[in-house]
Image 1 (tube, rainbow, N blue to C red):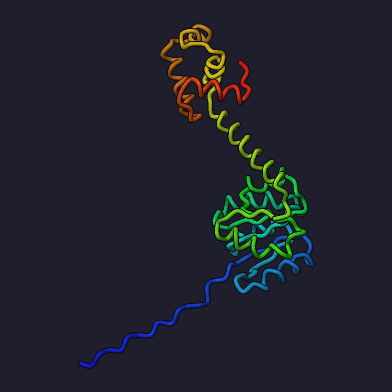
Image 2: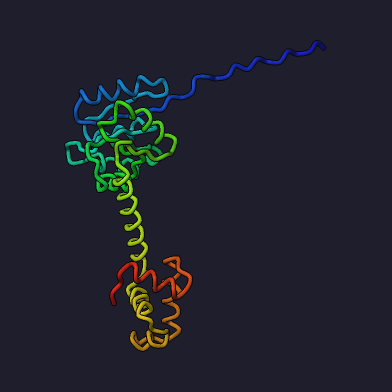
Length: 231
């Protein structure tokens, strides 16, 4: 039997394009965004929206890889609210927010709503394609014109909020126990103040430590001091 020649495998060099939707209430601005994006052979604009509500509908209909949303849009649904709704209903869609505001409050709100990137409009000509590609790959992107101070302020804001959220998981009784531990009281003294058995105090204390990720009395005291807890 004659030998069979191996099949020649032709590699598929045409990688799938990143599918993008654009949302801005100014048609001329959207056209500018589209022109910048479509100059890249790796990107494809599959839809445009003129409001936050339309952006949400378009994202659910087209299921793009990336939604580029202007921060401020008419109709009661801002870019941030649109990001929040898209993230809730189509979490696979990555969000890039475009904004005029180099302010950590807007930055924090955008990321909390599910955005992966925050790009200032004065950087769009140079960074829009890079930002879309970054958020598509799962990375975060911040405009290079955002100062280090703004980024540091945002990170501190996030750390503080996460810390407060951790404290909110405690019950009122656990908070009371934490406060009394901070005052240097023993389990016996805490039981007398709160009119509880020592075993109950120990249970509250253990749950408090578990919820906050603490390991001993010293860490509990330090945590209470840093959070400024007052009984």
